[in-house]
Image 1 (cartoon, rainbow, N blue to C red):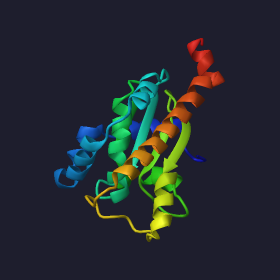
Image 2 (cartoon, rainbow, N blue to C red; image 1 turned 120 degrees about the horizontal axis):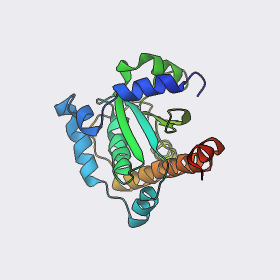
Image 3 (cartoon, rainbow, N blue to C red; image 1 turned 135 degrees about the horizontal axis):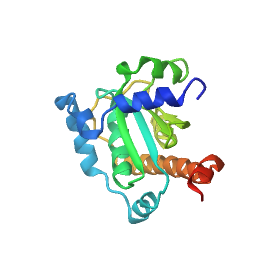
Length: 190
């Protein structure tokens, strides 16, 4: 997270769009996003966990509406955000945030999606991307290449559940970090 500054993250977050506004930037490419979001259901335990978060957590997904990995993960992140009033999720196009992408290169490349978790004051907390561990395991088992699948390609329901849990685990980890942060505990008197 070297090079990520709160002031720059706040500026990017303020320029980013919520779910509906982001999808309205390209209605044709947005359809697979909406379709997958309709298929995602969180369990009672997952919903209870996310609903119990108490620290504000601005989350920025750097994305490409055209990107298959983004199509697979953006709707999951949206479902998670809908389950927690503490999570404010925004989306920003990779090409609209070149400086941020330069700071977030993975293995020398501009990969999407990239998800930046921040504290309430936009101090960087965690960065995750471009795929979750379970998806990399799935790719390795199937011996897939490193290309980005075509948006709208069928997605295995079991893989969606595993990827959803991977993301919930990261949101929980970040929330616990924020909840236990001495700096934030002092600020909130808890």
